[in-house]
Length: 201
Image 1: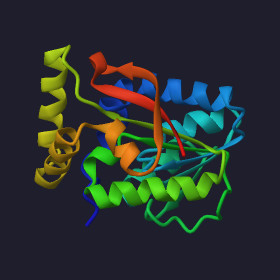
Image 2: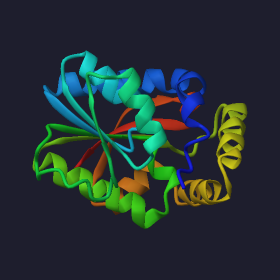
Image 3: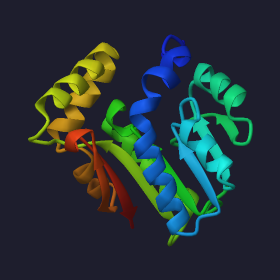
């Protein structure tokens, strides 16, 4: 069963506006690093992959949800999309200059999230750029934090449990360090509750 089939038709309109500034910052970082190709793991409806392709990058999105990819292929034809597991894409080692993971780690069991990061390292190879955007604990903007927790709770019991465990462990930065990556903050969003990190080996 595709757990994202219900949200897929709503995703661009409801979630897209909140993600747009994050995705723009990710695209800026890809350009600044001179990346001509990027793989978007857990790409959803292809918002970021589509932006990258529109900007002239070779962009490939990977997602396990057929419903999400149906939307992606219809709306973002310049990017390529693969239905598959982001922990084992089957793509060649070092075949991309950059890899992006946007708000996917917090919704997975920790071992799955760690496997996604391992796949990211394999796909970009030594010296490749890995960009990760996800949640982090913050002390300001309490209403934003409350809204994020509410949205994550509405996403379902398993999703919510993964989010709570992710945040209890400290959010994105310690999760990246656990994967052997060194997180360097690029920008913060949503009142500090979300961060974009350049993750170096």
